[in-house]
Image 1 (cartoon, rainbow, N blue to C red):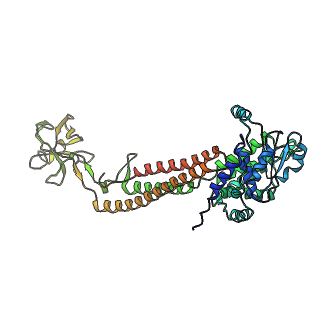
Image 2 (cartoon, rainbow, N blue to C red):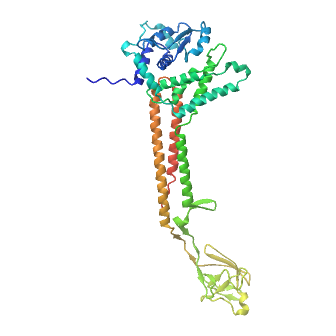
Image 3 (cartoon, rainbow, N blue to C red):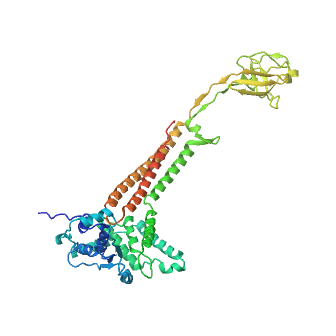
Amino acid sequence: MEAESPIPISKRTKSLISHITQGLKERNEVMSLAFLSCIAGENFCLYGPSGTGKATMLKKLKSAFAGRFQSKSKIFETPADSEAISSSWEDFLLHLHVEPIQNDQVFLKLITSKKSDSQIVKAENSIAADELKEFDSQIEDITVPVEVQEVIARIRTELNARNLASDESEKSEQFYISDDRWIKIMRLLKTSAFLNGRKAVDFIDCELISLCIWKIKKTRAKTASTSKEVAKIVTDCITQSKNPFDEHISQLESLVADYNAFVDSAFYIEQDGQKVKNPELFGYTKPSEPNVFKMNDGTSAFRILHPEEIRSYDYITPSYIAQEFSLYGNGKGAYFDQNRERIAKNDRYRDKYFVKNLTIVDGTAVWTDGDCNKEYSLRVQMIPENFVKGDEEKLSAIKAQADEKYNLIARAIEKEGEKIQKYIRSKERQYKANLFSPKSTCERLLSKAAHSGERIFELSKLFRNSVVKLGS
C-alpha cells in the first residue's frame, strides 16, 4: 500500500490556523501571528484588557503542537500589568494586542450565540516535536534575495535617520533594534516564507518587521502612534523597493532608442528642418524643369514654345532665350533664332540685343529687354516631372540589417512581457494565499508589477511603429 503524500506546508498551516481560530471573533490576525512566532521558535506576548479571551487563545494555540509547548508566550492584562510589560518588553519578538470586539454585528453574535465547547486541534493533526526540528532545518534553507536585503537595509537606515533627526526632547523616544533582534526578525521572515510554501523571502514578508519594532520609552509602552509610524516606514520602503523588471526594461528602452537612431541615420536625411527619406535610397520625384538646349556657340538656352515678335533694338522673333551670355557678362542673356544662332545684326549692334532679369516660373519665362526695357513673358519648353529610382540594392542591404536588429529586440521585448505576466500571475497566487501579511500591501506590490507590464506593452507598441518597409 502506497504511503499518503504529505500535505503541503502552506495548506497544512492554513488548516491549523483555521482550526485554532474557530469560534473566536476578530482574532484571526493575532492567532496567525502567534502561530507564526511559535514555528519560528520566537517568544510573543498577548496583552490587552482582561476578559478578551487571551487565555482561551493560548490554550487553542497550544493544541496545535503535540508534546511540550516550546514558545515562552505570556499574557498581560492592561493597564494593570503595565509595569510588567515595561520590564519584560524586550523578551518578546511580537507583542500582540488583543482588543475587545470592535464590530457591532460580531459583538452581538458573540453575546447571543449558544455557548459551545472550545475547539482544540486533535493530537493526530498537531505538529510533533520531530516535525518542528525538520521545519527548523528547512527554514534555515530559505533564501533572502538581494532586493529583499536592500529593503531591510533601507528600513534600518530610515529608522536611524529618524533618530538622528529627533531633537533633545525626543532622545528618550528613539527607535532601537539590536543586532540580535534583527536576527530574530529575519528568522520570522524566513518562517513566514516557509509556511507560505515559498523557497525565498518576499517583499510581502517584510511587512512583519513593523510588528517587531517600537520606540524606547520610559514606560516601554507600544503606542498606537508609534505603531503607525513604524508601519508607514516599513510600507514605504517596501513599495519603493526596486522593481525586478526596471533594469531589464530600461535596457530594452535603450536598445529601442539605439535602433531608432540607426533607422534615422540609415534611412533619413534632414531637409529644411524636417526628417525625410533619403532620396539616394528610396528615390525621388524630380520636379518639372525647363528643357535646356545648346546653341551653336555653346550657350545654354531655353526653347520658346510659341515664338512671337517682340521689340528690342528693332523687331525680332526669337526661338530661344539664354539667361547668361558669356560675351555680355554681368548677368545679361541673349536671343537666338530657330537655327540656334545669336540674334544680332552684326558685331556693331551686338550689345543692342540682350536679355536681363530672366526668370522661369511654372513654365513661363519672364524677362526685360535690355534695349527698350520692356517686360515680356512667353512659355518655354519644360521637362515633365519624373521619378528617379534610388539605389535599391543598397536599400535592401540596409533594410536587412535593420530587420535583423528589429527582430532581435522584438523577441526580447516579447519574452520580457511574457516573463512579467508569468511573474504577476505567480505573485497574485502567492499574495492571495498569504497567511500573515495585509492585503493592502499585496495590492500595492501587484500594482508595481502591473506597471511594469504596462510599460513593456507601451514599449512594444512604440517599437512596432518603428518598422521601416522597403519602398514605403
